Amino acid sequence: MRALDHFKEATKGAVTEIEGARLGVRRLPPDTTVYAERDPPSLVFTLFDGWALRFKLLENGKRQILNVLLPGDTFGVQPDMTSELDHTAETVTEVSLCVFKQESVMQLFQSQPTYGWQLSWMLAHEQSAMNEHLTNIGRRTAFERLGFFLLETYSRMERRDAAGNGVCEFPLRQIDVADVLSLSPETVNRLLAQMSRDGLARVSHGRLYILDRNRLTETCHFHERFLSPKPLL
Amino acid sequence: MRALDHFKEATKGAVTEIEGARLGVRRLPPDTTVYAERDPPSLVFTLFDGWALRFKLLENGKRQILNVLLPGDTFGVQPDMTSELDHTAETVTEVSLCVFKQESVMQLFQSQPTYGWQLSWMLAHEQSAMNEHLTNIGRRTAFERLGFFLLETYSRMERRDAAGNGVCEFPLRQIDVADVLSLSPETVNRLLAQMSRDGLARVSHGRLYILDRNRLTETCHFHERFLSPKPLL
DNA sequence: CGGTTTTTTGATCACAGTCAAGTTAGGTGG
DNA sequence: CCACCTAACTTGACTGTGATCAAAAAACCG
Image (cartoon, rainbow over all chains, first blue to last red; front, side, top):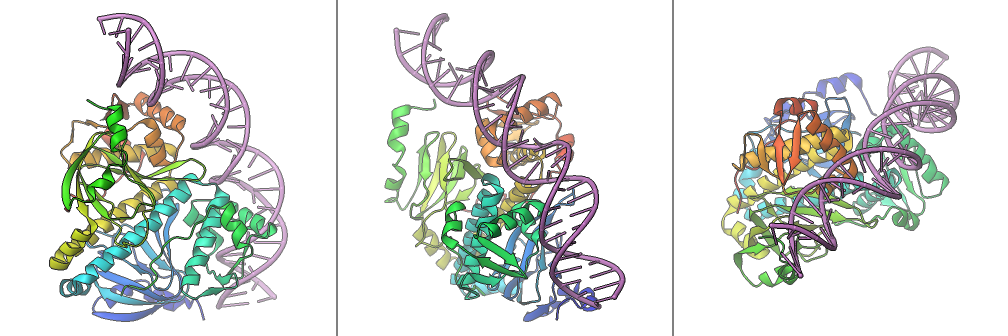
């Protein structure tokens, strides 16, 4: 049901044509660009279903994933209409997302002041997550980073009732995990092998298994963060 | 005129007593905690004058600086009143900052819907800066990180009309720079020496000298970001 | 079934961290 | 104004974590 190649091609630039729509739901195949760096920021998205990534591409070809997007997450907010987007968003799995015109969101805020506060609230939460992520990458060992990320992701899935019994979907490739954590894919592979051997966690066949949550939480100094529990838009 | 030791001690926890004030300007000596991790987020600050830092402290004693705060920057926004702050803010120099009660900011947004949008705008800009910072730390060499940071800081000072002719104030110690860039202080020292030798940039006596902006910009793949030009509050 | 992508494993290397000692500078008190 | 003391900076030698290079095995997909 995945990767219909010509369909994929067809939708590559198709997202812009949604722009005409004031508001609607769109279905996108895996590995599709939702928006690209340097695009004008005219749309706001909420992910209904599936996984997506926000990332930056560097001069040297390296990729830094900024954020893994799970169902319920809002993205693409760039209140300054004049400037360009500074990153790319791409689907991982098949995805359905809700699309808004930037303008209509702004209008909504005019008429419903509370929403402005809610958007700020969401953005502040995101910032808090970024803080954690930055600290993680900057000041922890490769092992800790990986464990932290797996626990965080599992915990986010749990909050969406999409995880239980230590198992949840996990459609990311090792290279994606590497680009989230600023590691090489080989290192990620070796660490996953080690965690599996140690009975801490395991990723296989697109699933994440948290084998010993307590021990992993402790060895990685993970602590539950306070994440946006309900979708905004 | 700096570092009056007992005065410093006295103000260590004094910021909380400001809370009574609905809104006011406060002067703080260097190396003073503005707010600490786990504090309830009841205040919002705008920096009028001086430098400050937002950072996280880790279990292992390491410190990750999230952000260098320059005059005009707003910080402490945590729209969720119930949760705790996840980082600490500390002054670097003597500082004067404008203090708001979180509540009065919220009320302002109720009556003036536009401000809600403006706050979102500011937060989105900050997020964009964080994206850049994360990418910088995750995917660039130590040399590039440092050059990038120096150029970024100079450029921010310039926008505040506090830089000219390749020179600006720079009150950070090498260990602070190290904690911004997730490097060891020794590495920062060696790289600064190298940049000085190469005629690219120099830091001394609390000043930053950009010696060859073009060459530095190119070697570090720096690109001007779009930063909040005007203060919000 | 064949081709491609992803994962796995091994060997080697290098960038930046750590440890240790010495130098400089800034701030304080006589 | 100078001497002292501490904090910050500097330099060198060595180490280690994680990157890189290379090649094989496995999984996935048409």
